[in-house]
Image (cartoon, rainbow, N blue to C red):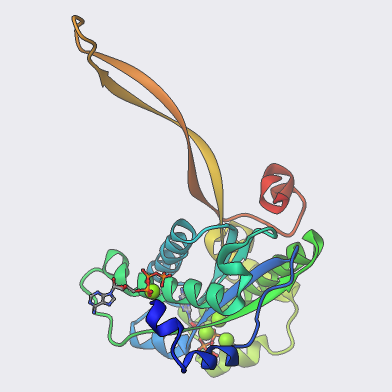
Length: 269
Ligand code: ATP
Ligand code: ATP
Ligand code: MG
Ligand code: MG
Ligand code: MG
Ligand code: MG
């Protein structure tokens, strides 16, 4: 209020430091669940991938994209999600702390709000938290490399976890034996163990688990039938087509060029 603005206390505002994000850069906010190793255990997440938990992460990320402006793409895997603001965003004057805290709090409250939709009667035992950071990338190439880094991380972890838990669940090994078995193995060795010992072709495993989740805005034509009633006319049904923006989910490779060629708008603004 204006009374406050003129008070002798007003000077304390000048202690706030400037955290404006450099112009032209893509702004990335990455969130990661706090101590989710424990959270997963306490809530009996399926190993190595709990689809309820992944669904809830994506739902929360959608809620962030739908509620906050200017996020063009988000990528998530495990207990993390990255959100990319378009490089021209002026939202909250590009103040890093504002962007970060809005994303983190909207995500966290959504995670709790939508818990039941994914876990049903299984209770949420304590309030989960997420850490967050802001990183700026000056070029489209840098941004793509950032997202490639996160998807490569998803791949490496999922391949390891898939073999590890297959050795235990289907091979009857203990966790220590499975660890020893995998020590020093390359990706090709892991693929070979799955294939020759368990008849599993890793490439046929769930794309959600192998590739993570990419969310982007897409225009979709939507046709609804509308009642129209003009004076002195019969009421009639008329099809009306509208173009609507919707968040769409992909579980595909985003390291190669194909995804970016098919969705050129994502890096554009
Ligand atoms: P912004 O997103 O910019 O913060 P805002 O609407 O939250 O917008 P604030 O200056 O933070 O604006 O003001 C918070 C408003 O929320 C108050 O002006 C009041 O209308 C309402 N509000 C908050 N807490 C209470 C409360 N306990 N009782 C009644 N109204 C409240
Ligand atoms: P920190 O607080 O440092 O992030 P953390 O325990 O969350 O610690 P991460 O490296 O973020 O460590 O790992 C997240 C862990 O959460 C995974 O290793 C896994 O145990 C668990 N986890 C997250 N999502 C799932 C899921 N969908 N299914 C099964 N386990 C999951
Ligand atoms: Mg971490
Ligand atoms: Mg974590
Ligand atoms: Mg993590
Ligand atoms: Mg407020």
